[in-house]
Length: 221
Image (cartoon, rainbow, N blue to C red; front, side):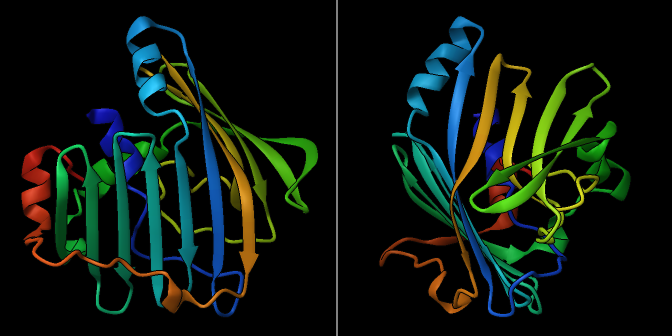
């Protein structure tokens, strides 16, 4: 479950935007297991995808975690309002609230960006964009590899994309302490999208709980 909620945190507070109306990126997630426990998780998450759409007014994220769960998040910037829908084996669950009220202390929030960043003089084309390579080494010596497009400024605060990487990552290889290597690869990029098309719809009859309820369940931010 901890891995699930690590993948959940794909929406945060402030960002700049490349496209006037918005940008949409869809990633395919490939997993490589190095332990029996991780092998089971990799099988359950086979076929996972992550979608991002963002503009000056809204960030939208949808993570399809294989056969286990789908999570959709909508964040309205000016209102600081976050709406989340989780659906899957546990049924439908919805949460809403002010994201700033859920922030941890600044020093704790910055921990996920700790590590030494190395910008490599190496380029490749991904989805038609010229991308540069970066390697982030954390305190335990784990190395994550990123291919980023400088042309696109990403949302800040994505767990998968540390703030030290100067562009939107279109491919990321992230080691996990549970024995999983998670590789996100962009398979679709659309510019100038209408962000109003990317919203979270709560099914009728589903109770919308507070974000504090989610944190108490173990899905803290």
